[in-house]
Amino acid sequence: MGLEVVVDEIKAKGDREAAAIKAAAEAQAKEIVNEANLRANEIRLAAEKDADTQADRIMIREVASANLVVKRDFLNAQKELLDKVYTSAAEEIANLPADVHAKAVRELLKESAKQIKAGVVFTNARDEKAAKEAISGLKTLSGFTFGGITDIAGGVVVQSTDGQLTLDFSYQTFMGEVWETSLKDASEILFG
Image 1 (tube, rainbow, N blue to C red):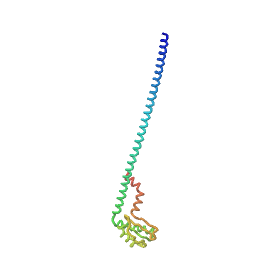
Image 2: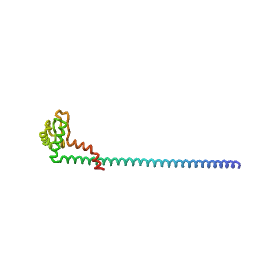
Image 3: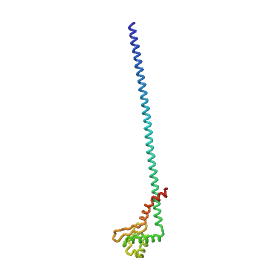
Image 4: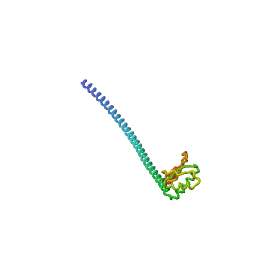
């Protein structure tokens, strides 16, 4: 019987040690699982935060892109309207009565004579007669000749006889100068 007691004691001690090892292992496993859960939660929160940040960035990019498209379309519409205004103004000038164009040609030739003493005058077909009449009728234009028709909406282009100087007193040139200096004002009037 003495051996059985020793065996039972060893067995009991082994069971206690096994239970202690098992309890320690379970506690360690529980701690590992808790740490893993905490880490998984941290990863999940970080991933959610990253996803939110990415979504915000995408939203900001998309909004900025949409704003650029709207702004570009708005600017294109403004430009189109300004181009229509310019074209309309050019048409209005072109459709003025013949006597207005004749007077303009005469005055522009007088101005040319102040800058060039002798030269060749070019006009469009409509203003040819007015230019020839001014050249033959005004003493200050005695050094000028009619050079022919050129592609302008109105006004005159005068070239010095030596070809060194050309005065562009065409309607397009005047309109371009006025347009450039008045574009900001026109934009403010049209678009506020």
